[in-house]
Length: 187
Image (cartoon, rainbow, N blue to C red; front, side):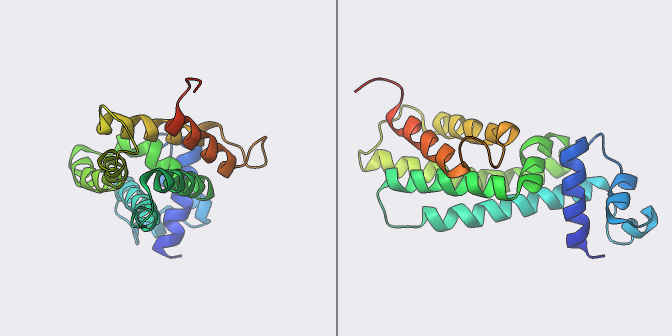
């Protein structure tokens, strides 16, 4: 049993039961080990949660940063970022669910440590939108609010999206991009 095995099992358990509903015994059961064996690798459920949040944010940041660094117009970049983000969410649903829905379970000290990582991730989106404003592709009154709205729409998708449903995650991403870029008003 490795630390990675523990994190994978914990992500599944936290997604199914929620952080507060899950116990170290549940994680040990998912790993088919005794609870004391877990404590050989980790100190607490908080430590596991922080490690999962760091892992998820690291993976998402690395993935989106590659797209954000491309020398393409901001609207094309935003479309690709939306597509890449939703694909990463759906392909890593256990891990990203923990990030999106369990981050509030961090204790105060650990939360303070987590916030800069979250802010760095959101900065990738702000930078893409600001680039669009600078190049006169986008007209936005409040870039920060736009980032939060975009994140809210995309993050909530994880609660209802079903692989093999009516639309693929790529189709949903394309629809979101179209909505975000063109709005609802008829041209």
